[in-house]
Length: 180
Image (cartoon, rainbow, N blue to C red):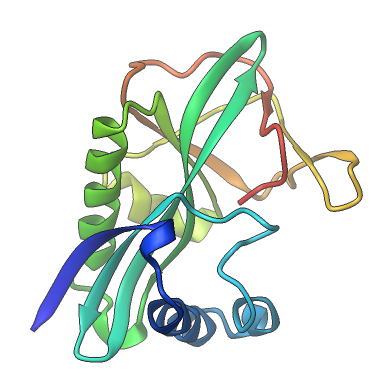
């Protein structure tokens, strides 16, 4: 039987951490060197995660990074989406929509301004089914591991989910840290 739950980052114990990392490595074998050690992409840990479990497997997951970003002269608190996965045997059942919807419901309760994610073109439709919209930003800037301000590659599609704000401001997005 599948169970879904929200887990605050401080409540993720070693066992759950290891189970999430194992599933991340299964879904992203090219990044298993990173995910074998940490769930924090570029050092960004989520503030909470939505996990779906079936027996001993974490079968679907999304992490939410709490970040204040700048868009032009506007600061926004965004729910940054990271480490989204559904194990191969569970795909095609709408589980991504389930975890994403639960994540955004919780982000709304926590008064985030909007959800923000970056994806590859092949995944745009997956997120659109959950209410995410493509964001036409001038550019997106991040701070890399060396402290340099760099532009995210153009193949990264920015998508937004309205929460406290109904329209995302126009202009360049500065992540005020590394991407997640």
